Length: 591
Image (cartoon, rainbow, N blue to C red):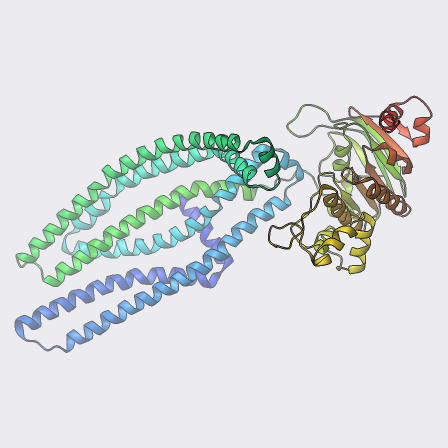
């Protein structure tokens, strides 16, 4: 009870913070409505007794008119208040749901990248997203709980003036069903938590089937049926477990809900007999019948609301666990980095969280101001990991990284990343305009058409703009726009590179920037990189070693270690690993 009450207070507090006006209006309306309902029952009793009195004794009709008018005013007031509450409920629900969605979005946006490698984090995030509605449900249930509670108390008090046993019997008759329902509610929710990984899997398969990014493979390899069967298999397993539990709950509730109906029949019979025997008036019969109906409905709503709150209290615990956790392990520094002049990796070792294999095994190198450095190595050698450590997406397991002869941890994360413009090999574009796609890398900078055009020129993306129906204002992809443009692999890469070139920074990092470009676009890109490198530090990776000649320093990585460092001329002058890789690629073009 204490935890349930705390959940109600929390939700009311969140609701008040979201919109005090609508929260107060809804609460006031829900409190007034049951009072009006009980008042109507008494007015109707007086009206019936007055009509019977007039019929039997010929009394004046004026009291009847007054009571009819009063009853009509109460009825109209009920309708108006109901409409007002309904309006406030609709507005408040929209605003409240927005608050919950933004809470989850803010929590995800503030989380370190490291947590996205952890499947448990995805389970918690999916649970929180699914259960965020619980906060809203508890609020609505809490408000209905207050309203039905007032109705119950009022009805019981009036019924007890006739027979104290009536109110007690109806209330007690509902307790067994409430207890059993509460038990099964807990069991159902516990099962849903156990099944969260299964639900993620079947949602993933659904997204595979409905996503444009996989449709070509699905059609080509004819695996649609296989994926559909896999989805059905997972769903059937999840459903069978839930079905058995829900079946048991339904059977128990059917049996236990018969008890209140038997008690109701007994009370109605007793009241009817009293009226027939002259122990009460026809108006009293009408009053008690109305109150019994109100009480039964109120008790059912009361029990239902309490169970809803109890059920969702567990869900709100899941939501709060996600919302209260910072999901941060990268401590922020205090110093503002204004320029990157030197970078040093000193015996850096690293393994990804929840893994046992070291990706980097004592990496050491230095890059100086205005130097163009290339990281070279086969796939999986650790090149991209070095970039992630440099951006402090992760911290080294051992060793240190220095920028300007200071430990990288001394700088604020914001200022560190502000000094770096980065293109990752898996970078993608967004369903916005071409202009917006470019400017996203530096949203704090006032959008400048000239700067956007320069970035497009450096990446070689003018062909995309020129073929687009609305130029720079054309939408990328057809998600939301029938005139949206679809991009080839090379065009996607080219446009994503524009973002890196648009950003003002003292360092440029390019991870496999030409992997999807044609030879002409690739040559133009590296000519621009050479020009950019005159004023900025550049770090890039490339599997095509023919482009590495522009690097002032080549750092060869293998099995997580630096095995060679030097210029291309130096590394080719003696038998080295770089020389071996270079010659392997050169042989492909020899006749």
